Image (cartoon, rainbow, N blue to C red; front, side, top):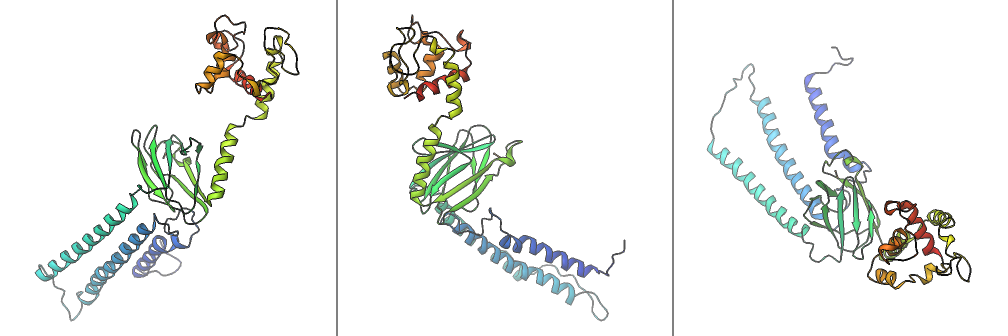
Length: 348
Ligand code: CUA
């Protein structure tokens, strides 16, 4: 094949080498990549970045010396008119030198690595701990008070935060490049890392261990914000998780108007259509009314009312309250029971 411009082999090699160097070493610094770990220094990443650059420059100097020596030899001592190329074998001084110098370099870098590694794995003095759980295919974060969120975690800035990482199914790997190194998520084990954001902002990450078909979508985001904002986020998120959607309450009301109202008064004061059935018009504020239900709720059972609506006789044998859950012989699906419960608890 003929190229439109004359390209000799030397030009092609130099051009390709230059392109490779650009791609590998230069472009990453200028590309606005949100997951470039080299661009942002935090207490947990600065050692890694320094170690990277130390290795890079040492390797660069070695490359220049070795490649320069090869290229110089090839040019200066090549076979040509007036000069005969010769092969050399064995040079004790040179062989000692090029064994001992690399050995010293490698030992030095190892010492540097070990020092960095012990700082990176020291999670002992973290000011806050978040449990991170990997599952196919989502990360979830559990805060000390039990709040659990998926995919997006918030942390306070200028705080050393410990992540306890585990998995409930297969191997995953948790990595927020700008904030820390990678850590494997292994079922049955907990591995800890720490992060320390010094600037507010969003830090993107993702699963970096192939974990099945949804691996590429197993993203994570850490949002670092000032402590006051972080505390507000905690409160707002907790509240949002407790709020029952209005359409679920509306659906529950519709069902209750065909079922509960046969015996109970649901609105206003006065006795119910069945005088033995309590007036439920303020149930969300006053309930539970039965001692058996009160005991369930006090024992911390969050499903106390759901259990009652589903199958009251299992709680109070002989009660006139019908069984509603279809799997127990009633006429309502579990979802419908949930809606009725949401409606009853909204009555205040
Ligand atoms: Cu989880 Cu890949």
